[in-house]
Length: 392
Ligand code: CAA
Image 1 (tube, protein in one colour):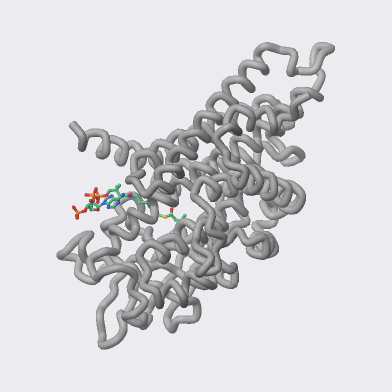
Image 2 (image 1 turned 90 degrees about the vertical axis):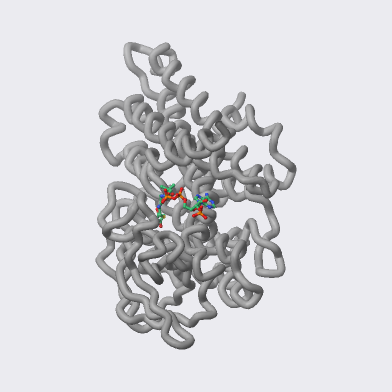
């Protein structure tokens, strides 16, 4: 008899290479054995699970999609999406710590970095010796990323950073931050630069940890700069490239969040499926009722579709073709599927779904952020529209 997991994987398994299947199985085993059992505690105590990141690092996953010469595993982006999904099925907090580290910090250094920058910054990130973060949003600019006001003024061999960045995933816990700052506001988005900033830089401080609805164990906070000197050699790409670096970074990041949303939806579905076979009402288990069967069927259809969109976008990234629209498709759809599905999973559990005795309420809370960070669903629609209309 098929288990829930094999049923849900079966429709797509033909597309995976042997290596991808192996990484899926391996990460599934680690995540279910090590991360799932303490996901509720991490959530309830708002605890950053440092030991999860360390296990991810010692399992050689931190540099998964990067070449071995930088300490990576030399695997592809489809494998990366698979890893994020498996982590999110067990613990959404852990999946976002990992995806922000890989997609939002290590990836842009790999794409835009000089050889020296890769050796200095990328290698320790790939080895998991350092944790990465990305700082684009500000108190007054989220969706309108080009409106960033944090300033970087050139003074000799340094840029002097001043200002605040908001909603920084891995906030206080990270070591390496990719910070977007404005050098000349009259140039608008062309005035933005991308700087690699290390923890411990003078004038670099942290605001309070945000008290969030979900992904509570991931450290999210404001970071502040007051006359912080950043060496000129820490600038990633060119002096007018900060916005481009951000957009390219987010294209890849959105695949990570789509995979996270798929994992959250699938994880909640697996719990609801199991519960429906155990819970008795009106003298039969509730999975015998068509109302429940239709909910499970519809959810699994949407989750499989979201996974396909995610892998399709990751495949585009692997092939080196432009995948901006595909990443937005995947992130938009997967995030909305995660929200719809987790809400239905709570419904299947009834009253038990609404309390913390079962994990589905956590999945529902964790799902919401996937519609917001790394570009809201409205921004994804905008990106898709821009890319679709461009061809007309
Ligand atoms: N790749 C490369 N270049 C791109 C690009 C892409 N995907 N998208 C846009 N560009 C380029 C354009 O070609 C254009 O270049 P030129 O000036 O040379 O012609 C330039 O960028 C400006 O493009 P737009 O006019 O389209 O830019 P815009 O100001 O209208 O913004 C937007 C478009 C899609 C709304 C963008 O601002 C955006 O993505 N906003 C959302 C930001 C976001 O996702 N923030 C989340 C931050 S991370 C986070 O959530 C925290 C965390 O830690 C997880």
